[in-house]
Each structure stands twice: as structure tokens, then as C-alpha cells.
Amino acid sequence: MKKPVKIVLISIVVLGVAGLAAGLFLFNKKHSDLNKVKPDFKIEASIIQKEFEENEASATSKYLNKIIEISGQIQSVKQGDGFASSINLKTGSEMSSVICTFSSSGDISGLAAGSDITVRGECSGFLMDVLLNNCVIVK
Image 1 (cartoon, helix red, strand yellow):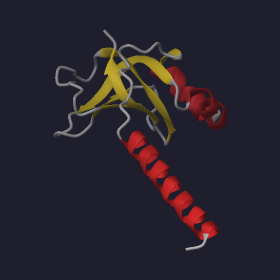
Image 2 (cartoon, one colour):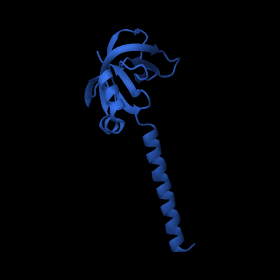
Image 3 (cartoon, helix red, strand yellow):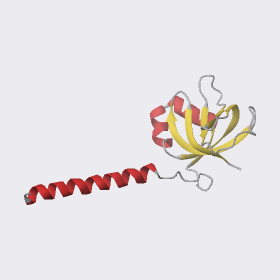
Image 4 (tube, helix red, strand yellow):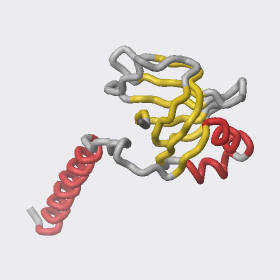
């Protein structure tokens, strides 16, 4: 085999192995424990929902992928069956709420509608509702 062909084949194999290693690393990467992370913002559910409703582009650039500690009153609780559980926080809007999704290990069984709560999560944006993922209850 000619030397240039051999170099190209070796380069392709090395790049393939590097790509596979990077993919496996990202796939197995653990989420940070939000109980130990300082939030980027502390805000009320009604205020963040109003910001997204009034200027979605500005609020998205401000909050997207940021850790937010949010306080409000529970509107509803949805306990997942081995899957993610969630709570909806009231915002004063009939059309929109703040949805806080917990991992399968998050225990929200003791929560009830009408209770006040503070949760910390990562903002995923706004789709008629403000979405927070990987939430934990702030004690």
C-alpha cells in the first residue's frame, strides 16, 4: 500500500476513535447535584412567567440553561411511575404556568396543590409554560 493512502486510513481510524470516545464521555456525563449549586437567579414564578410572556427573546437569552431558584404555590403534582415527576407552579395566568420536572429519584409524594414551595432547576425555555428540568426542592 502506498504511503499517502496509509496515512489517510490511519487518520480516519484515529478520528473515529476520538469521536467515539467523546460521544461516550458526553453520553455518560452526570448532571451536577443542584442541591450544591448556587443559583444564577432567585425569582418568583409569576415574575419569570411575566418576563417570558412580555419579551420571550430577552427572557430566553437571560434565563436559558441557567440555574434558577424559583418560589411559588403548587398548582398540581404529577407523580411519575418510574419516570420523571413534575409540579406546576401558579403564575396568575390561566394560560401558562411554571413546570418543574424532577428526575425519577426525586420524591415529591408529600407535596400537595396549594402549598408554597421553592425549587431549584435548569431553565429549558418557554413553550406556553416556563420549563425547569433536573429540579430539586430547596429546604
